[in-house]
Every structure is written in C-alpha cells, then in structure tokens.
Length: 440
Image (tube, rainbow, N blue to C red; front, side, top):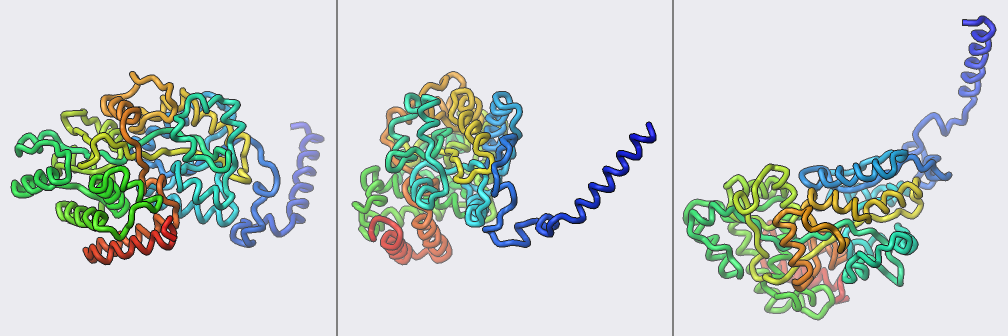
C-alpha cells in the first residue's frame, strides 16, 4: 500500500474513533430500555427509508404460512428493492399475536402493516383508537371498488373512509369429517343438530371418537356455529344488534346444545392446537371437527385427498348459510416505512397476489375476478356458496363484536368450560352484552 494512503487512512480512523467517543449517551443503549415510550427510536422520529416493510400477522404454520409466502414471492417480484420483514407471531386465531400487537401499539411502535379481521375487530378497535389510516386514495388508484364485494366494503369502512385491504373470504361454519369412519359405522353426514347428536351417539357406542377439538378459541369457534345452527340466521344476527335477547329461552336451548356437543369431544382438547384437532380427523382418529376452511389448506399441505381423507358440509342447522370472516391488511398511522407499506397493500389487493395466496391458504379471493380454475374442489364449492348463501358474520374472527365484547364472551366461556353451568353462562353473556354490546 502507498505510505501516504496508509497514513491518511490511519488518521481518518483515529478521527472517527474520537468522534464516536464524543457521541451523546442516548446512542449508547437501546431507547426502548432507557427511555419512556414517548422517546421512540430515531426511526419513529424522522422519515425512514422505504427500503423495507414490516408486516405483522399470525400466519406461522400450515397452509397459512405457505399462503403468505406465496404472496411475499409476488411482492418480491414487483418490489425487489424493498425488504419484506415477516413479523408473524404464532398463536391460533391471532390470540398471541394480537396481544403482542396491542403492546406495540400502546408503546408507539407500530409495524407498517398488520393483519386484522374485517368487521368490528377493525372498526371497533383500530379505527376507534385512531391507529390506522384511511385508504380511499389507494382504492381509487387501484380500481378496487370495481372488484371488491359490495357486502364487504361497509365492514371495513366508517364515515365514508375505507380502512383495510381484504385479501380473502373464509367460511367459519364448516363441519369436516372422515368419510371412511362415517361409512364404516353407517353414519350419514348430519344436516341438523338432532342428526348430529344421533350420529355422534352411534360413533361413541362403536368406540370412535366423535368430535375433535383444540384449545379454547376453537371452542369459541364451535360455540358460534352452534348458536347459528340452533337460532337460525335472523336470530343469530339479532344477538349482535340487540334484537335477540341473550337471556331468552331460544338462547338457553342453544347453550344446552353447545354443552351437549362438548360432551362428545376429546378429553385432551385444551392441549391441542387447531391443526392437531383437524389432523385427528384426516388420520382417522376422530369423525368430526368444526373449523374454518383454512383447514382445507392444511389438509392439502399434509398431502390429503378431498372426499377420501376428508369431506365437508355446512355445520348442522346451517345449510344455506355462510358464516364468514375476512383477513385484511391495514396501514399504520405513523408507519415507519409508509411508502413501502403502500406497495405491500397494492400487492395484497391485486389479482396476482390474491390468486397466489388463497389457493394455498385455503380461502377464496376477496376480489370477484379471480380465476376459479386455480382453486381445488372444496374452495370452488365455497365460491359457489359465498355467491348464493345467506351470509352472516363470525364472532371468533372479528366480524360481529369488538374486542371488548368478545373478550367478555371469552371470559364467560372459559368459566363455563370449567363449571358446565349453563345458567351461569347465560347470565354472564347477558351481562357482557349490557357491558360492551348493543344491550347497554
């Protein structure tokens, strides 16, 4: 090396070290551990470079993670200069992830975009708290109002503003079953609550596990389908607008039906994930499982065959009714990488992005112009039902109740699962509606 160049570089290094030693103390320790939330790291105090985007979800396993990866692949192709930061947190139905998200939002440390369910979870939680931006301009520039279902837009809107980009439509009220077990025991696929009870009695007498269940959120999922199957769509919808009395005799009947359904479930349910419970059916270890149609994506990932390893029907009492939910992505107020987040949302709402994501995820597109031939047999049937059935919303997955009300219902459910006291459960549900719902 040239000596002059060597001396020059050495001098520059010494100057750099001297300057570093004079740096303010705030740079010597992470701000999150040394300062209150208002003294956020520099990335939140000044515009950040749009070279990355942090996207938060609870898609970490099964067809969910595979579907997200498929959409990320589209994003990487359309925006190769933006690094995608997958901030997914494991936990069925987002239970764990949303707790982490709430903590981050409270601390003023939002991800650029996060997964949220269309409906009251979105409007009654994030919009009410002023945590997400309207996306009207994006809808206009991308022409999404022409390709998104008219029934979906009001669920993601308030006061004329649209707040999220739906990526899919899921069906909650699906009864998955093992065709071989039913055939071997002479059991037909049930369409009413009474037929379901009779089928499970037959299976139980033959030594077959009638129903597979998992952790508590899967029991809330089952609960909403039993409410629907017992009450019918009008009275079910009335629970959420105040026109159906939670203390009524018809709700009591629904709760008694729910208690009876639980009596057929596996005793180890509390220790199982939804995937574990679903797998009991395709492995021939249980006859029935009630789960959303993301289970279809999981079964495909397991290499299982439709109508051989698994079959499906509407949950008992709900033929012709589509109990739906929709995953969507939002734009955080104060997003550290706002421009990059908008690029992500463009992909999430695009035909290419949704066609890559949904066949793998086990859902149908939110868009109405996706190619039906890309989807498997179950999802094609779901497309037909979505366009023809009576549509109602899901409790567990954010459509019909805001977070506060849902939390109270979940607390009441947990106490009921421990006690089995139907009367006390109903009283708690009445109180929850009076506290956080339309019965105030």
